[in-house]
Amino acid sequence: NAGVTQTPKFQVLKTGQSMTLQCAQDMNHNSMYWYRQDPGMGLRLIYYSASEGTTDKGEVPNGYNVSRLNKREFSLRLESAAPSQTSVYFCASSERRVWGSEKLFFGSGTQLSVL
Amino acid sequence: EDQVTQSPEALRLQEGESSSLNCSYTVSGLRGLFWYRQDPGKGPEFLFTLYSAGEEKEKERLKATLTKKESFLHITAPKPEDSATYLCAVLTGANNLFFGTGTRLTVIP
Image (cartoon, rainbow over all chains, first blue to last red; front, side, top):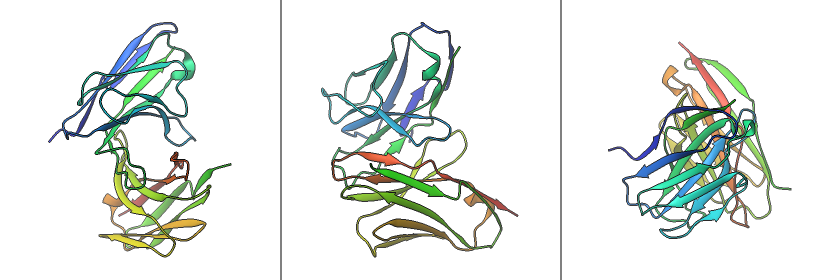
């Protein structure tokens, strides 16, 4: 019973390098999300996908792109990493994006350092 | 401006010593308030959703309550396994979900 699986768990990049964070869920959820978590700040939404085939910007989308590959998978790409993108990244999913009844299921996170 | 504030930042309790965590909010049109638990190195895990003032939810040693300005997470007779960071999140009328910065709870045996 895997739930939400993220890879990699840790990554170190140099400024300007690119990388893709992978996320997959096995709960047949419609909606998926990418958050970042920084010390002293709450989780902040980067992008979300309300359903397969759709993606929308969240609170802090600059410097990121996403792809909803299929219903299971939602990837986050950093095209040119910057030190300000050093953070812990969480992928989450929910049955549907009907806010108010939202119960998010989170992965275990990717700790990213950009030097 | 929509805002969520959790207090205290950190709390140390002896095993069995009951206490409360606070989540105060100023948002336009609250549609829901959520509590999550986060263990070190893990993602948040859902605990409760509260929708209206006066509502209460319970799960084992935890009870969440909601007023028009704040929510409390009451922990009764905590055990060391209750040690974690507890996050609250509020859903605004504009369908934005804001997370607080959390309260880090340590329960000492």
